[in-house]
Length: 287
Image (cartoon, rainbow, N blue to C red; front, side, top):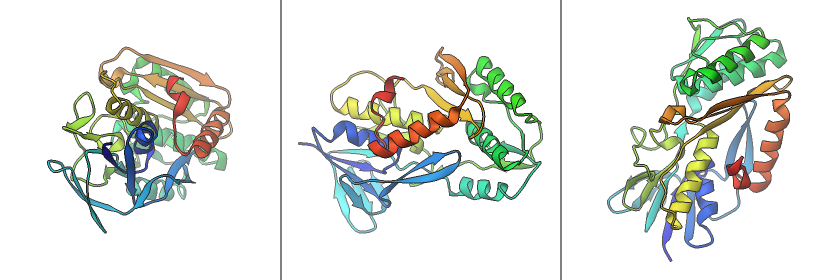
């Protein structure tokens, strides 16, 4: 039975684990026993139980498939790197923004515009009136961009070209840069990289989960290539929102959205679903 080490316990690493645990000897190396789920920009910690080695990964020797932690050295038949990205600078930035008002916020990377939009919408609950500076998710397609603009107009959120503050990019959590993979999400034979740890466009939980599921299925014998899709929900805790779906960033043709009367209901369902299932995407992969 192959020995598989998953580095990281975020959305992608957990879903790879759930796909592999019945057929292989799988361990997750992580410095945290919790999955952080973000509900309207507020982190909610979900405790994990399964097959956790509570150590911090310091380095990985790709050729030798060797993992160096702060306590031990491990060798594996297969490695799945799911170390994510370091968002501490983004969390600090958003906490600072909670003390501001009537300012225009943009993002250093357009792929992070969804974070800014959801933050601005969430702050409406506290009578904060921020402006949005950006392209309204235009990288997902013109239809979605127009839908986002319509949503912002509904909340009387001004769109401006010049930001007063800019959300910084997240940083690689382990390596000096984000990793490049092939269409099987491999960086070498029997070494995979998934989720926010890789250079693959938008860094978003839904996509990371699908990467974890794909790698798990691939190791289990599936032969297809990874087919990415961007899915997220934009919305306020107290009003309407929208769900967007797009494969445009990767040259696909999917581009659709639908408005939601109460996105808080959907987000609440998702939080409880992932809390109970401890991050396991399950049947939601097909929705």
